[in-house]
Image 1: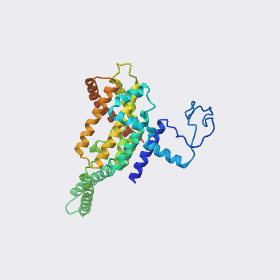
Image 2: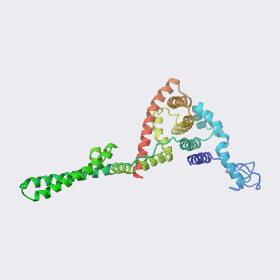
Image 3: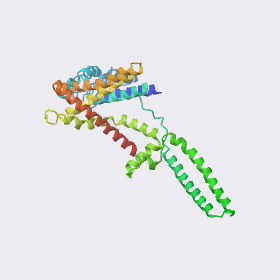
Image 4: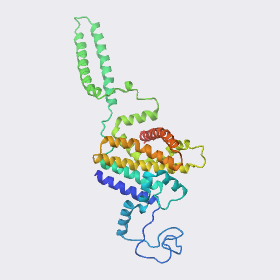
Length: 356
């Protein structure tokens, strides 16, 4: 079942990426005259010079199947022009796209979407996902037990006081002693019920200090306590759906590295970020597959640690025409910024989960 879902995500990512790249259907075998069927403009060549639609359109199930296969494996041929540059000359790719050389490359957003869909598909396939098999928090249950324990203790103390006030010959002392014995028996039951909860690391709300007095925070804490598995699932799902938030979150930090250089615009920084995130997604795919086929964890960790830094350094050096020293310094600073960006991203997801 997970493999089918992964394949579906991969196909969806390829088709969505191709759609974002403004792909058009391949020409079919049947002509439809010399007018564009989309806008009515007189055709001069194979494509309409006004709207870009092919002069020949297809209308068959075979064509639909071809469109899916073509979208997944060919990406209009641009993917295979883009991927080598994205891997080894990312800064050149960034600079060439910004400069207007775009027909031969996959657009940044298209490869961004494709890589994210593919990454989550592969994660699902190889089982690289956080466990959602978490037991619900039982803080409320333990708190209720201890509250009743306190009440029973008070009743027993009252019974002891009442018994001690009576003369030794008073028959009512027997009734008070029965109240004390009943209370002691109830206390043993409550202590037995609380013991496994304490062993599991649960403590009452008063000891945990979970509640802050702010409704927004307290509400989120309660939701995590009641159903942590559901909340973790929501966190995973939100991370998948809102990965694009990494782009606007990263933009101010990258701008800070070049704010005094007016030749670089926010658009240029955004293209840099999008291509960089796309590469990181593809890198995680390779590392995940490598782990699944038995590559040593030491090698996986080494690649996961050094390849992103090297790639960012190369992209900075090539895209902004920096010296290697300047690129390395900026990469170190940007690595710190990336940690802050990821923290902000997780906090936003947690806030969305708490209120959603």
